[in-house]
Amino acid sequence: MEYDVEYLKNQTSINYDKTLCYCKNVSYRDAYKAIADNKLTSLDEVVDKTQASTGCGGCKERILSLIEYVKKNEYAPLDL
Image (cartoon, rainbow, N blue to C red; front, top):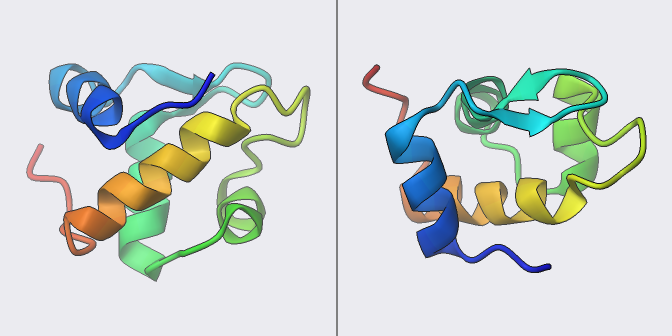
């Protein structure tokens, strides 16, 4: 399943504490912060910073979509 930017916007604007990676217990907030703070642009960079997607790998598409979402937000920090 591919997650588009609008889906991620809904997920993150409602609750940044929702789980992005269940295997490593990484929230959208953790991943967003890592991406925005470090201006990450690739899945490998996010994996290195958060350990997300190092279990089953089922969250890869969500991570890639989140990267695009953060980039479209020009790496703006969370205001929460």
